[in-house]
Amino acid sequence: MRKIAIANQKGGVGKTTTAINLSAALAERNKDVLLIDLDPQGHATEGLGFASVYDAEISIADYLVGRIKAPLSDIIIEAEDFHLIPSNVNLFAVEQELLMIKKREFVLSKLIDGLDYDYILVDCPPNLGVLVDNALITTQEILIPIQAEDTSIRALFLLFDQLNAIEKSFGIKIKILGILPSLFLYDSISRQTLESLEGKLPLIPFQIKKRVDIKRAWREGKSLLKYNPKLDMADNYRKLANLVEKGGVE
Image (cartoon, rainbow, N blue to C red; front, side, top):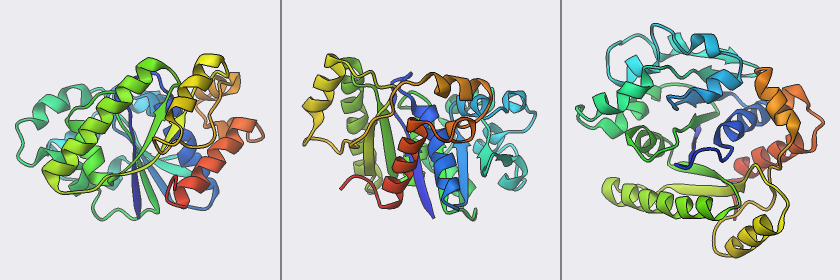
């Protein structure tokens, strides 16, 4: 089983769109996929048409802090051709509660132990808190969406610092599958930014460009691969799934 965190502490970089569409692309390849929406804002949950479960009485928030001992499978729902553990409003309070728990960085890992999937993807919140630590320690693989702009690059190096700190503190190695340019505008600044990263970082050699159908798919509660499977960017998500299956950027 492969476990992958999709993370960047900078918001608005296409992280959740990547999580949804990579899940759909892997499922299209006949892989059993579980997407965990670990972001308290619940964008992946909403983007798959499940906004109504965001206020559910029992959620992953209860599992993370040990308020419930029922099987985790009780909150897994079907989303297109893959499965989803939805986010919940109570996740906003969970980070503070987790600070009081011993070995708090390992609670997600213990929760998903025993689940049987080919891939578990974790859509992370846009910060560097304990929920992201849980995701990184659990998965030990990361895919990093970025925008090709200076502020995104500065945030990227802060994330690298966090990865290094986790590796040293817990004696693990976190594999960077690749850095995915997302929400890409083909202008001179974007091109120059990507050129500055080439050969220095594991940059994925294609981009997810802005397309109005990506927004329309979100509004319809669908992945792009279901909404418009013939769109060029749907094919790029398929290319991303192929790259992930091969183990990332070489």
